[in-house]
Image 1 (cartoon, rainbow, N blue to C red):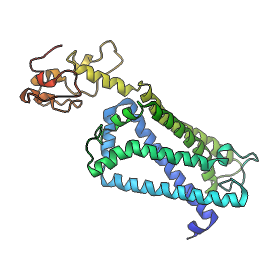
Image 2 (tube, rainbow, N blue to C red):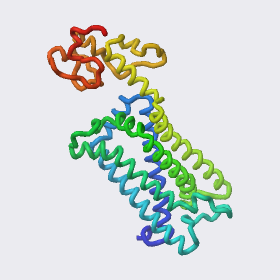
Image 3 (cartoon, rainbow, N blue to C red):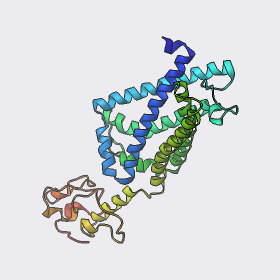
Image 4 (tube, one colour):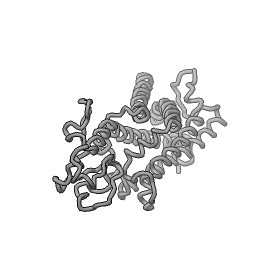
Length: 305
C-alpha cells in the first residue's frame, strides 16, 4: 500500500518498471540486430518466441510493466505539476537549469505510446496475435518476422515515423535512466555525473541498434538482404550454391540448402524459399513455386536457363 499511496513509493515503482523496460529493450535490440545478418536466424528466434507458454507469460508481464509505468507517469506528472511545476522526479543534486527532456517527459511519453501502438500493429498483431487466433490471408507467415521487417521498412512513411519514435525514446530514456538511479538512492556527488554519462552512452548505443535496423532495411543495405538475393539467383538455375552471387564475391548464399534446379537428383534436400518442395516437384506436375523465378516443377527437364 505504501508503494501505491506515497509519493516516494510511486517514484520507486516508476524507477523499477522503467529499468525493467530498458532491460527488455536491450534484449529486443540485440534480437533485431540478428536480422541485419541472417533472416533465417532471426526467424528461428521469432519461432522460439512465438505462442509458447513462456513467450505468452513474458508478453503479459511486459504489458503489465508498461501499463503500470504509464499510469504512474500520469499520476506523478499531475502530482508534481501541482506541487512544483513540470518536474517529474525528486532529484536533489540536479543542476539549476532543468533539462528539456525533464520538462517534456509527458509529451515524450505520449509520442512513445503512439509509436508503441504502431509497432504492435505492424509486428505483434501480424505475428504473435495472428498465430494465436490462426489468422489466414496475411501477406506473410506469422513466424516470418524477417519478411515483416522488410515489408514495414520498405514504406517511407513508416521509416520516418519509426525514426521520430526512436528519437523520442532516446530523449525519454536519457533523462529517465539517471533519474531512476537517483530515485533508488544509488547516487552521490561523485557518481551523479558518472551515472548521467553512463545512462546517455548506454541509451545512445541501444537506440543506435534499433535505428541501424530501420535504416538498413529502408535503404536495402542490410547484409541479410544480400544473402537473400543470392538464394533467389540460385533458384534461377544460373549457378551452383558455392558461386551463387555472380559478380559479387563478398556475398555468400547461406539460406538455400540445395539448388532447386538440380533437386530431382538430390532427394531429401529442402529449399526454404519455395512454398512447394522442389525436391519432390518432378512427381507433382502442375504445382507452382511463387518464390522461384523458374518453375521448380519443371526442373527435372530444365537443368540450365
